[in-house]
Amino acid sequence: MSMKVAFIGLGVMGYPMAGHLANAGHTVTVYNRTTAKAQKWVSEYQGEYAETPSEAAKGADIVFMCVGNDDDLRSVVYGEHGEHGEHGVLASMHEGSYLVDHTTTSAEVAREVGAQAKLQGIAFLDAPVSGGQAGAENGVLTVMVGGDEADFNVVQPVMAAFSRFSQLLGEVGSGQLCKMVNQICIAGVVQGLAEGLHFAKQAGLDGEKVIETISKGAAGSWQMENRYKTMWAGEYEFGFAVDWMRKDLGIALDEAKANGATLPMTATVDQYYADVQALGGGRYDTSSLLARIEALHKK
Image 1: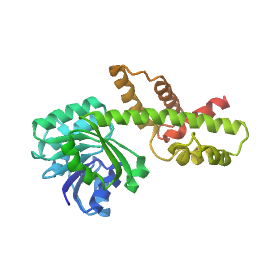
Image 2: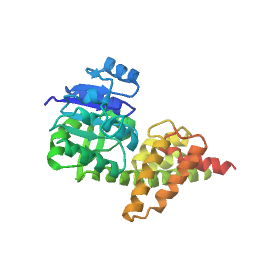
Image 3: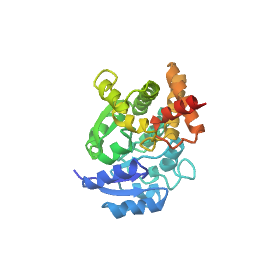
Image 4: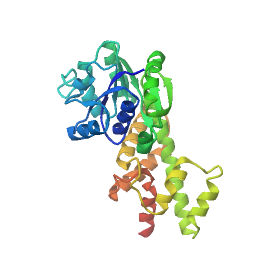
């Protein structure tokens, strides 16, 4: 079923996600803070671009958002000029429509936006994604969703254009909490892989043969399969940036303080990523924890 949708935010994730929606036959209007990016998207896909989030959202059945952080989300939802600014999506969305946020944010802001949307008769789903840039480009993202089941059932078939799996986790905010679990788990796995590869190098082992062997057993992981070659070569320009990972881990650590969870490994790896930033690697991908170890080893 074709729908009229808007997509707000055309970064490395949003650009291909919006493209998949257009390719699936939906009528898509996009907005991006840098208009040139929106114009480029329109030149590649069937669709239109708007000058403001509010204009993009006007008349849409579903408004998707994929921006940077809590502040960016508030800006596109409420507008630049206060809570009910004329340029925010809520200013033009109609009752009975759906607002879906794919940004990784705090659970707190998800609940806040959800409550405001509800006052206007608009359904809100927080729906952060996992799978990185490659997952977005290939349309195989995993979507973690918080919201009402009836709303999820309407939106899920549309999200299927850019995802291979989506799961409703509970009420609004639950999707963001699940994404925090995702990032917590990734942090530990990448640090373990970085230390393992460093050890293998120091031991004079053939990295290719080591990984071919241990990846078949209990040590195997997505990170190992997709990142060990570039890590071994000292190349860190693939995928999710350290700056964004630190944002996400900060959100998880703040939430842990609120709910009483103990995250010693996450806090440690977050500081290791701070070391990577200090090395000038803020835009390196998250596998660059190995670069930190090797830099320390050279001292």
